[in-house]
Image 1 (cartoon, rainbow, N blue to C red):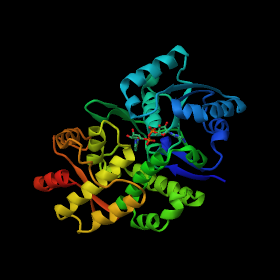
Image 2: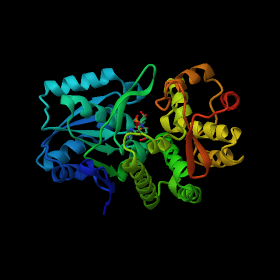
Image 3: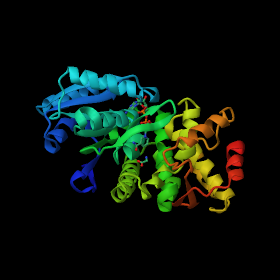
Image 4: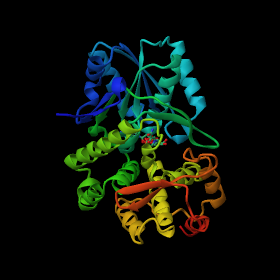
Amino acid sequence: MEQILTVGLGDRSYPIYIGSGIMPRLGQYLRERLHSRRYAIISDHKVEALYGEQVLQSLRAAGLEGELFSFPAGEASKELATIAQLASTMAQRNFDRADAIVALGGGVSGDMAGFLAAIYMRGIPFVQVPTTLLAQVDSSVGGKTGVDIPEGKNLIGAFYQPRLVLIDTDVLQTLPQDEFLGGMGEVIKYGASLDADFFHYLEAQQEKILAQDRACLNHVIHHCCTLKAKVVEQDEREGGLRRVLNFGHTIGHAVEAASDYSLLHGFAVAIGMCAVTELAERCGYASAGLRREIATLLTVYGLPADIPPKLDRARIRRFMLTDKKSVGRRLFFVLPVELGKVMVTDQIDATALDKVLAAS
Ligand code: NAD
Ligand code: GLY
């Protein structure tokens, strides 16, 4: 029925369930896997309207209590003010350490609910129930939680692992097409940076994936979670290896922030992957043609390859300098060396970077 993966982190290990029909049985999964009997379900208004009642009902059916707390959908809500408001409401409703949080929604809900779980009463358990493709293949796994501040994306946060990840692939049926394509940006990231065979699978199965063929999508989600789990198990707190998961993100995050978040995250990552691959080619780390190969696949999936001409290059540069991969003002990039293989370096030719930012 459902497939089960494990993220192996010693006594903080947790399972990921992937399959159809999980959401209506959510209460059962919680009852079987967690001790808590009362859950704060954190979601955005859109996801609450679509799935909130179903989730509450499934908790009731399992003999559990649930209360929904929601906020306006979108990246603009991913800020400290929302966290403060949610924490106050939970405290007014007497949630305590015996209770737990369910993150119901996309990466914004997951990042915020996870951060709230990390700091509420100095930490309470939480469960990820991702409802976008992006969250199902990436953000719900690995324990990165946090919020944005005006100076940059995800600059406040904590590593805090969920107790359980429940991925119901049925919920993708209500996801708007551009959000689905944004998720494909992160999917292609896995192929381009970690697994050339998977990249070729995405090329070969483009029609079926774009038609959201169930078997293909299950394979894609399972494979991405497997790749991510392997990396996180070796480097949970991004001391080294985990940085490879940020392929496309140094320039991507800066482009996303410079667009005032009008660009979806996955679209910004697509642009960032092409820019950084061009940088790798210009610096001689990758052979000519790699950018074209990656850009071609992104285009097939309706994703952009170039930095929008109207975006202010100086702002992009400023946001790049606040990237969490910069150390002592040295900016590190995750550069592809060939399809499925990346390296991390700060040895970048400044003229090449100027050309990438100017010419893209
Ligand atoms: P999101 O959470 O804003 O969701 C996108 C939109 O889809 C929202 O409007 C939401 O209401 C709607 N939606 C969600 N599920 C739906 C469904 N099943 N049907 C219909 N509509 C639905 O954005 P996202 O793209 O999921 O996540 C982006 C965020 O994830 C960014 O903040 C990014 O920084 C973060 N992220 C975090 C990690 C991590 O490791 N923690 C990794 C990648 C991205
Ligand atoms: N999305 C990058 C990471 O989880 O490390």
